[in-house]
Image (cartoon, rainbow, N blue to C red; front, side):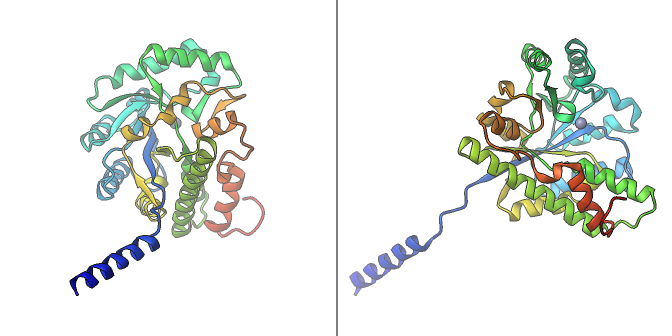
Length: 317
Ligand SMILES: [Zn+2]
């Protein structure tokens, strides 16, 4: 009887194993916020925005996000330094985005590296400082390979590494479009805006992950580009929920930037150095376009925004 029971149990367990589905591949993503301290938007004061961002990250259990700072802009923003100290006190980490948000296309390599140096001199005093540099506009010199290589060498000399992005859905666009719509007196459907914002960022994460898998054969730890912008902060809790429902785990910036995928950031060689690292590595590997998420084309994002958030049918505003 006991033996029969044991056999039966073993059979049930085997059946259980046979029908159990393989777990979905793990997909990991870190959240990063650029342009600290960002200008005030149309919906929140900068104090409100910082508090909401901190609360959202804490309540969602996001242990560590990265903030890319423009220290040269701090004098223009009330409480800017206090905001950075508050992020830091929450366990988040701070890194370099040039002193004044310079574009590499506008400066010589020497002047650009001086911008990086000025930012680094300020950031070095912070306890949670990381040696990461994020190019404003993700502009790494575009077609000017002498600039690209000159800055890469300058970063290496300074002990800095590229604080690259692997997933981007142009969050800044939705903030800008909504701000302009409010300014122009349009009725903004905030619920529709949130849905469009969240949907775009989840689709972008999925798009760039698929692109990475097709390029390197595995899902790397991802780095999502976001900004300290009103619309981003207003819908961040919804975005984190949606990413998790889509199978993503939010990881620390430290974990993401430790992924071997990041090694490509110092060495990729494509005709034009700008955009996500995922795009660049796919381009180098010869994958066909599109190597970017569709709504990173502002005209595509604009059409979706006008139709869904402003309720406009056809034509541009
Ligand atoms: Zn920026």
